[in-house]
Image (cartoon, rainbow, N blue to C red; front, side):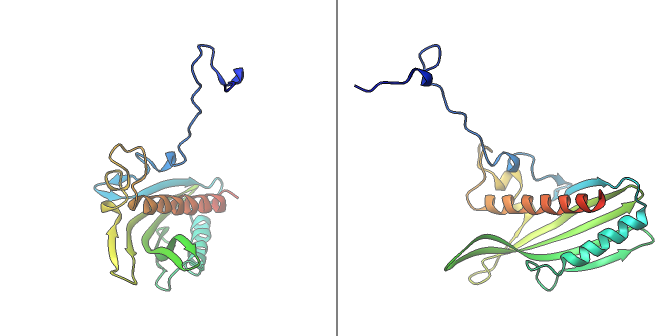
Length: 190
């Protein structure tokens, strides 16, 4: 006969259900915004006490630095830096690594554009024009974000879990966007 500890029974003699947390909650419905049918991540980062010129200089230097980081492919570059209008545009190609173990390297080439508009006290940042080049060694499949990581494609039918294949792209893209936006926020709010 098995004894059941009283602490594990609820008041009404039913078993308590353990609380299940969804680690993917931040990646579910609404995490990939669309504007006019295109995936566009955007935010406004406040920079209290900084002029548009100061913000421009800080972000321009950081974008230049980003193009030289180890995950970047040599085509990454700042394609527009107009101090007069406060506009910055960076076009990036980098590796998103899903799995890196001995004999297994699962990664995709990740393309995106960062568009920044600097103004006194803030910067408007957009990450858009996202696409992927996957499995280059075999068939080199190209996926557009709009056809791969949106709620329709990146989630299961019930929209309560990430899709089996495209879900890893959705997760890594959101993580990269979060990293870039947090990086710029830390830089501008020092």
